[in-house]
View 1 (cartoon, helix red, strand yellow):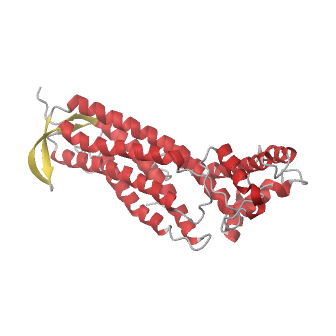
View 2: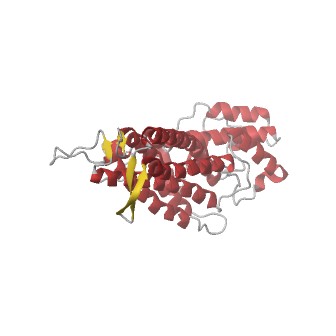
View 3: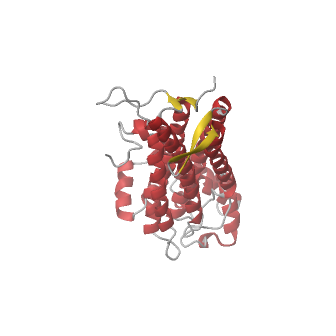
Length: 353
């Protein structure tokens, strides 16, 4: 066991997804936060809040920024969030006359939530690409073996004869729907969070909406009024992730059951047993089932985190930190595993040849 099997030295061989895990690294998070602060300065210059020279000094000072991670850790222990200490560090390399304009008008949650949106947007591009590839792979499998007869099962009992094409359709169709859900969500679901101290952007006055629009455009995010205590978008995204892994779990469960009987599937490259060398265990299929159930549990935490009191919550927000990165990683890993499993299927059904 470990705290995170997704990053464990050897369990990551089963659950790992280095491409997704990297998006939730401290380095990626800080890079995205620095991007927010640089884009904020540029947006404020474009709307006349600060001068172009001030914005250029901020961008120049932050272009090679490297955080003191030890100091950040101590800062989080004291403040509960990383941003106060991070802003203090970011102001150090900026000209002293304009350093106080770094982070002007923003609050910690603006920086942290926007960093999350920037990284989730990249994660969805990865997940959608893998999902599309898996759909194609399963489609090829259906084209190859689709005419083969297969025993249909209802309530775990043999029922009537079906074809491989009919079984694979139950795998492919949900994945196609999930891909559409992801693509639809991505159109406007990744929105800038920018509300200031209590969501009113009070320091920016009449220019608040204009600054927000420029900032959103500069970061490639949707322009939306602050949502810092409205977490339904996070929960909606988590729901899609759980749907994806749930459908992949159904695929894995079907393959595991077929492998148990053995007559209607031929798999290559199964897992070995330390006690029974003759066995080829359907490890990838089993892992898909486990990850589907894992995400089904985690989604309840995101629904709990919808309960954000007044204008900002600490507890509900922290609950997202504990749950959402693992859900994203579990989804990415599931797609990698499902791709490997599909490639292991040498034959489905009973060949008529």
